[in-house]
Amino acid sequence: MTPAAVITGIGVVAPTGTGVREHWANTLAGRSGIAPITSYAPGLPVAVAGQVTDFDETEWVDHRLIVQTDRWTWLAFAAARLALDDARLDPAGENPMALSVVTAGGSGGNAFGQREIQALWREGPRAVSAYQSIGWFYAASSGQLSIRHQLKGACGVIVADGAGGIEAVRQARRLLARGSAGVLTGGTEAPLSPYALVCQSGQRGLSQGSDPDTAYRPFAADATGHVPGEGGAMLVLEPEEKARARGARVYAEVAGTASTHDAWHPEDPPPDSRQLERAVRESIARAGCVPDDIDVVFADGAGDARADRLELDALRAVFDGRSVPVTAPKTMTGRLCSGGAALDLAWAALAIDRGVLPPTVNVPADALGPGLDLVIEARPADVRYALVVARGVGGFNSAAVLRRSDPAAEK
Image 1 (cartoon, one colour):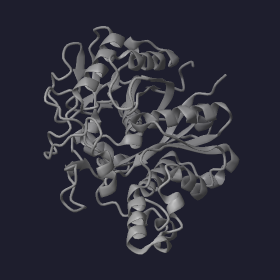
Image 2 (tube, helix red, strand yellow):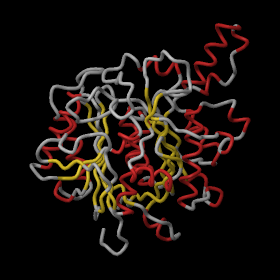
Image 3 (tube, helix red, strand yellow):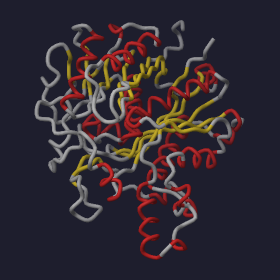
């Protein structure tokens, strides 16, 4: 029988805070980490973003590795350390061949790559660091985490834009089913260097707004698009039996996942929501439950009028008039590309563990229209099942159902 995969550790490095305690407190208070971009020269195509402030990489990364890696990997180092500590899992005390790492990758080491390209044009090929060949690479974080923590089982990276975090967790579940004793999984992103922002500037749905309170308002009638953000989350997944045997805290079980593809257009949303709806329905079915069992939905929240409408169409079709609570706490962080779905999974696990639904900010209470209940203030709730929805540019649709893990209940 396939072992139940449970989340035993959460590490967050996000615009809402570093570490679960700070992140959760700021989330419940509705404190947004979206602010004007001040770290680079003016004139960039994006005015505001979700930013990780007061992050000192020297607290998390050895100096010799700082010069070899990008900020995106530094954030992954920090989130991974926090997740392992939270799980009370010391890789040194485990069989290294049974521990794996799978991350979601997106744009890679942007600032590192920009710096080396500038050196190339300014000073010539000999000025380019030998680490350019690995520092920017989208698989760098997985490789560096594997080396640092001696995770000698499977090592991989999943590329699916904003859906990548769920896809990484799907792969982690497969690895547990094949015998891994634990998987470090999730994703981070650092897409706020000038080069990265210019690359994003032509992307459909990117907000040109300069007001942090209005630039990213998914589902609102006057939504202007999304804003980018940096950071994300790393999770520790273990077989439930092993986790219980060592006395680990269990946040939630990853009960069901599914993914589909629109196969429509490299950027534009599809004409209908059939494939997104299918991913949601399949994740619920694979979790062994029905739509009426879902206690909260963590929405994708594209911020684009057409994409938002398609998501609402899919949710209304699945829940068939039931007023299910829907939240998009990413309105406090922006869309984090490969880190976004991982952070939503962390929020969902915490909602199950703490019995509180995190809020959506800066969006009117009636923005979803009839049949869906937008959570605009933190509210107590008995959360047994949480649904996380994520989409990526190019047609990726992913969904995951987390379930409260009750050791006394029959599986």
